Amino acid sequence: MNTKHTAGPWKASFKEMGGYDCITDAYEVTTENGEHVALIDLRHYEQVTSGNMLEMPSTNEARTNARLIAAAPELLEVLREISAQLSAHPEAKQGNSRVHFCMHKARAALAKAEGKATLRFDDERTCYGNGARS
View 1 (cartoon, one colour):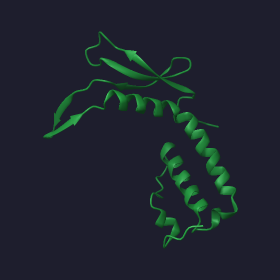
View 2 (cartoon, rainbow, N blue to C red; view 1 turned 45 degrees about the vertical axis):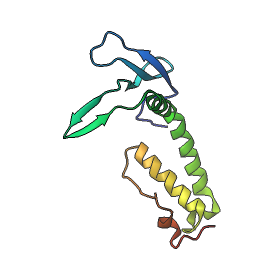
View 3 (cartoon, helix red, strand yellow; view 1 turned 60 degrees about the vertical axis):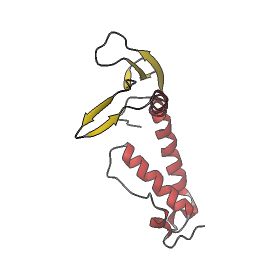
View 4 (spheres, rainbow, N blue to C red; view 1 turned 30 degrees about the vertical axis):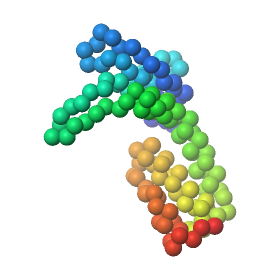
């Protein structure tokens, strides 16, 4: 497999960043070897931008986001396998089947993750027509 992202697995951990002016505490996503992948800032502040108040994520939301980011390599690998298995399913070519819909949802998510042209299958009616399901 030829990946363009940092090889997994990744892990999320709490990191005290005291002493830095721009960041206080954060959740850091790293490889098993400690290579930096992402940093989720835990500052909880409000900022005025174009008249709108923007609020940073809460600590719980930041922790959850860090865990999701850390799981990304494994999720991508599993989604590739699921997509391949669905493509081989006999109902994959039946435009009104649940298998067909799920296969296209998986392909759309893979295209998004791989930076390819975005496919949209976010509405079951796109594949089911009148809502018929198998």
